Length: 369
Image (cartoon, rainbow, N blue to C red; front, side, top):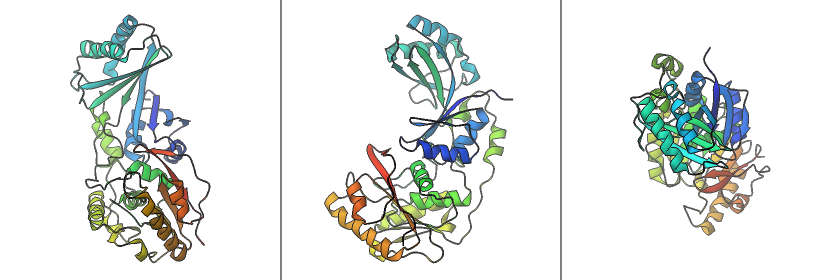
């Protein structure tokens, strides 16, 4: 039986409950929803599976222990006795980040010096700013807790998207917004302003059973005791999606469509996705059952002139009301006024979500009539 510890799944603030739904559906738990994410007790195999399988987590931290501490000499002594070798390897460089709150030790730099010295002198590992492994020390209420970032690069970096537009939707956010709209992989998805194709590609991967972390590296592969054979069995072989096409992206920018097609090919979902260059006025529902229209239009904050966008949102709403009966709509924007300009019958909106320095909200409808 492997040792268990607290595992923290980071979520964009405002989407913690949605990430908890995904984690529960994958059998993790019991779960506790906390500000900024979801936590549960588990072991290293759970860490591996969470990194590879969760679509909505931003990164995954393992809480590896800690101790009460009231002054720097005590921190120095206890950090030297901490069992670093259970997680870290002497031959893999480490980065240390420290935060202090409501504690007698209040100088993060001085605390960092003690912890760095303990790791370098007791374990023999090099400490460097560009290290592949990151230790996070949090000194709060006179307790020093250590976490290790098990993901490395943020988890929205799936390893498939090379081409992105001006304000790309992160894959992790896209997955949680799709889930919030009731998407479960069984229905078609249309994005009328697809940019680099994140919503259709994410929906297609989900429907095809492709694990989001199937083709990238993780920090935990550099930890002590990592079992490459067991991890390879967990990751397994990926499915190869086959048609018919059920995921559609449109954009009036031909460059965006080229990006989307290239990203879909790298993700292995070309067989079930289709992209075309066209304006909103040409949008028609594909043949077959209704599904979900998922769109992240320009907000005017970074792209586009806000005054001109009211007409764009109005046109989008008109086309959807006239042609997409039976379809649900999910629309992400930072501007409630722009969402209102669509004239669509949105349900009461959820919490604001932090996205690239903005607060955005998901606006959802039931099936249009």
